[in-house]
Length: 562
Image (cartoon, rainbow, N blue to C red; front, side, top):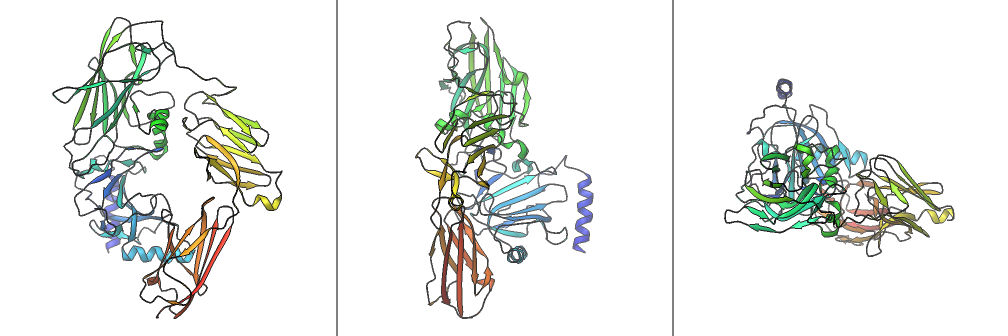
């Protein structure tokens, strides 16, 4: 009967669409004060943050509640990313997402573990049948944790529309205490055509800011000419935490006329990497500070821009005066305002931007190929945002593929010819990216005959490396002939210092055991409550493979009361 009622409500509600959602439709998924360490739309590495990161008071294991009634439509368990995550589709067509969980509720946990054991894999993705896992608003569905790519205990919470586009959860009535205005780190002016300048220079120009008595800011007076634009580095802090979070809205005016408006209320995952087009990427890579450009360049289809008068470009003419205003708001409408006085002044004594030309000119809308001895390179069209001169060189087995201060939107393909290596030596080879300390990091390497390739969205130095070392296996709470009847878990630490862990498999008396892997700590943990084997004498065997096929095996016998 519960299933029938649910589907009747689901069908009727979905017909109404998603135009007007009541502010009380979704409840907070935690029953503690809502304190956030990450806001929706926050600028992150290569993406916008797609939800709210809710603090869990530094603990794991807090109850996580269904924000609204619905059915569990997807469950994913992975080593990285969201870790353990639940997706619930609701009668109104929206989906709520709960990530970095430590455990699922007993019913869901049993559902998942049964399938993990059947697949003999910790990592799994499930799409339960429509009637199998239904939940009511306020049901406990899981417990908070720190799994996946989380850097500390918290709950990542999302609300997505019927097209799987993440939306700002605060739009649905969730409340965060916030009376603080956004904070300005820096303001920059940019020259946007070949004859434009700001104070006689075409280089990005940082403006000095003065705070007035009313809390607004005034930038220093500038002389400019041609098409110019501005960029701002800004953060927001809420009342109950000191985290440097993202802002909600930026709008600009030129002489009282709206020029540009950016609002973080919804985006699609297909556009999220364009965050690298929004920010001054080169400045970020050099200084680890993100400047949001308040103008829209070519190859920037971001839908977070709601108004674009002349794409945010400001045409400055000689002898005319302009007043440029920037309004930066958080979701509670706390606003920081900046006034920028501009005087149009033409000069032909311009300090022009120096463009370093090389033989390797890549047009953004064309495929580009490069070959030099043992290395082939393909950069597909649409990978670069601008036509760019690249620095390319090959020295022995090392390829210098430009530098990481230029963003790549799509994967380039880098191929190494390994025909000079003996067949038995190739199995330990991999393609690695060389960091500034001249240390390699493994990049996924495809091996086909005498051609090894990798696909990557990061420019830099790449080379061939050989990994001949086995992974390490260190038992934490088990040793030969040991009685561990009081232990609730079996713990082992694994590591591979070069190419990294690819997979692992544990058994007790020949039967597969499910071992949860936390790649951040290298810990593998088996829960004895799974009761794979109840014999007093237990032979534990663990096999670990790294990414070049080196195998390590650990085997011991322990005793445990049945």
